[in-house]
Amino acid sequence: MKNKVVVISGASSGIGKACAWHFAKNGSKVVLAARSNDKLNVIGEEMMSAGYEVLTVQADVSIEEDCQHLISETISKFKGIDVLINNAGISMRATLEDMDLSVMKKVMDVNFFGTVFCTKYALPHILKSKGSVVGVSSIAGYKGLPARTAYSASKFAMQGFLESLRIENLKKDLHVLIACPGFTASNIRNTALSKDGEVQKESPRDESKMMTAEKVAEYIYKAVVNRQNSLVLTINGKLTVLLNKLLPSLVDSLVYNHLKKEPNSPF
Image (cartoon, rainbow, N blue to C red; front, side):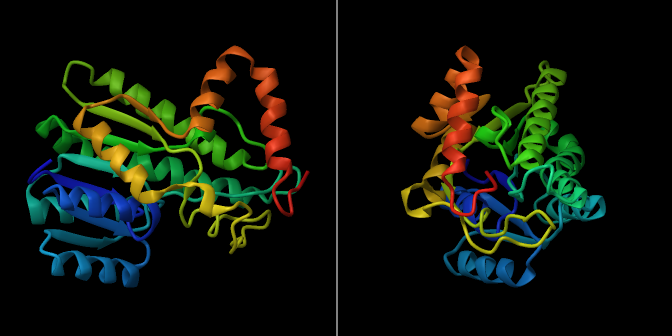
């Protein structure tokens, strides 16, 4: 990945930030995008001080114009794109019965349409470089999770979109990776939306027992280098995907019982 141009959305924290550092340490030129300009500037300055080539672009991926601006700024600076990592994401926790529908729309706008917008504008440049489009999805993109209807729907949609994109470009050497980390220690549960769209502010899960964002970044890096189609991480994640193919009704019950044990669960 030396001298490859890597664009990462949601790069101000968690998996996105970890990917930025890991790709940079392996010689890539990295473009960091996120809504928080302050956080981006801090990370950008740290990385430049370490001697890495970095561009920061403030962007809300749910806004098409921001995604177009992100790509145009990247091309202006680095003249091409080799890898796009669609990592920006937002979660939620509420049953559909209780949830305001604005939550569904917001989650879909960020997780699904953010991926669509960034990919659409980056695609001509990635096809030229025979590069990679990466979607950071979730086990929730393989198995619907209770009280995560919007989140699961957005990840199922993302995976369908990326799979279709791969097949459309089968003869053009486009690499498409769907990465599903499983539960990862990151900020996504702290910023998850409640039933009325307010930020949850604290995680309902024990983050200390989860895979680190840095470890996920290592796996994503290797999967990009090896041009893998899919990446499913953690033992629980792999088991969920496998068992759901064989015994879906059993997995329904297991998933329900597992998430019912969360603090302040709606069940």
